Length: 408
Image 1 (cartoon, rainbow, N blue to C red):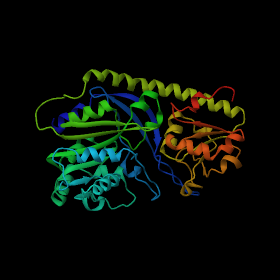
Image 2: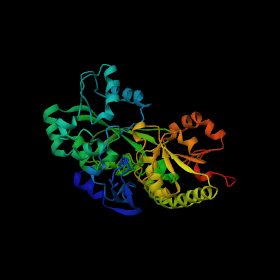
Image 3: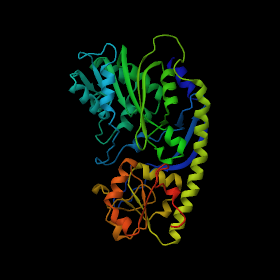
Image 4: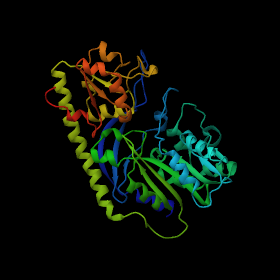
């Protein structure tokens, strides 16, 4: 399918959720600074042709760019050994094949390939290949600069690859059609793209607001991801959903579709299910907001100070979309760079975990990745013994805040 046809298919969208003005979640404010956290309108749209949930208008890239060099991101990697095995077993792939990566997120995969003897590799250099000079910039900037014309320049400079790996970048793309078309430019006619994105199906089903992040433009499910890849002119040769505690990962290995054949792999009968799930997400967000606010207001009346553990974008999103920032006393994080800074929402101060005890917290909301929450609870068992309560901000957790009994 041509680029224009693909782009046109994404225009058949309806408003799903108007979240009003939302903050840039990486914009921590230093003590004494008069800086103001930028806010922009955030609307989620539902594409009725593909079932894809996407933003109406991305935030400006310049404002999404991190302001501190200590801000990092981590993607799940437990499945990478298996992924590498799948890659090296692809038809016509051998130790002479060329492997490319889009960003720093792909280096760990390439290192594993090199360990198997596949050492003909290169990674896009933000400065040389994309013209990005700011060392604080990250994926939010790199995706925007990865245009079709720059892909042509990279091709002349580095040559075509047999395998081009792009982990956790497509969901950031301002224009997925242009991004995928640019990626096509960097593989041989029989080459492969290896794409990985977060799977939002679990979060959409549960009505979890924390899946929404201003840096993500698309919220893929297995269905919408495969459908879009086929619309963009790819054959999906391998598809896998890898389970993780918070958010599953979807991996697809695709090749250019050189025929005029239309959608084959995706079951269009499932489109109605996708649309119903997305519309249900809207109502579940509203119900969860009411339930959580009621719970926190009940704690406040009992003079039990409430803190939030984890000063990351998950916590920012949770407070902002649930509209409960006024019910939180302060934020806890053991990253020393964040101590004494102000949270990007409601100017909340950030302290280390000693504040659980010296500020006599009654209820501590766990806003860090669910995978890390058991370690926090174990480390601070004394907090529980002192009568404190840990509750998770994530639906589905056995300590979900919305499930706390009235006895508290």
